[in-house]
Length: 277
Ligand SMILES: CC(C)(COP(=O)(O)OP(=O)(O)OC[C@H]1O[C@@H](n2cnc3c(N)ncnc32)[C@H](O)[C@@H]1OP(=O)(O)O)[C@@H](O)C(=O)NCCC(=O)NCCS
Image (cartoon, rainbow, N blue to C red; front, side, top):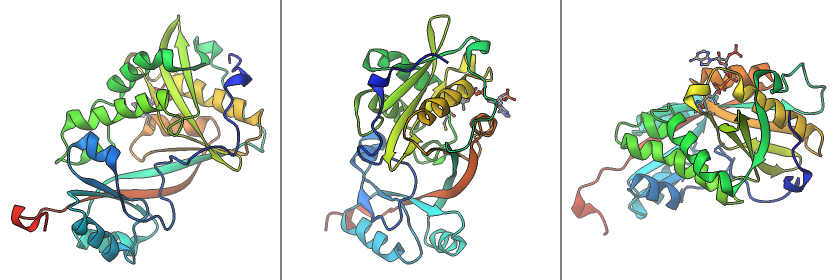
């Protein structure tokens, strides 16, 4: 693995949490980012239960919300069934993988033997990062793509915009690692510091022509090594349940499944005269 300059280190304990993961007790809020991306008025309920359902519905009606994107812990089957009965539809299931950094690393490939060099990248690499995201997330299995009412092109563009934010905005990512082969960027992985020694991976992708050749595995091995050498205790990586390739790479680099959550969408279709009252 190439050396990752300390100068680019994210400082443990800094900044805002930008996890896609449900946060306990979080209220329903309007998502301006999703609204811009999808072109309708979108709200998010990061941790919806049968108990908070009425309040979430009331919020959406009061704010003329078209689409509510909700997360529900997978083990909370009672809430899931209540949400289904209320008109929510299951779009995807997220699985969070976690790697504790206080135990010795298993034998992990450095990346060098498959010709991959892992190095930090920055704003100058934004165009290439976005191109990889555009190719890799075409027709992806995430909740934007699986909702038949969301335009497929707009769904793919969500990931390009997400990749761009990871390059530009500190609230999206603290560090971007790039995987290089023969001088060409073939993959990237974003890292976000959640504080208290925990890091998460908001986004990662590998160019389609280089997939299945161990690039993600090299990126993950680099992350584990880099975080282990600093004050971090664990790293989390969330992906959709159907992403076998990502989960194989995670399992091979010592990550373990830790929790899961469903993503549900509810569309509030109301006649025009009922709106803006
Ligand atoms: C997911 C992704 C990042 C994996 O990157 P990658 O460099 O291809 O992954 P790796 O080669 O390191 O490891 C993938 C493993 O899964 C295997 N694999 C790949 N596709 C597979 C599939 N459809 N079914 C089963 N196994 C698969 C590979 O053979 C490899 O197994 P190995 O360790 O036995 O060799 C890449 O496929 C990608 O960018 N996909 C689209 C975007 C995406 O899913 N991003 C991640 C979001 S969490």
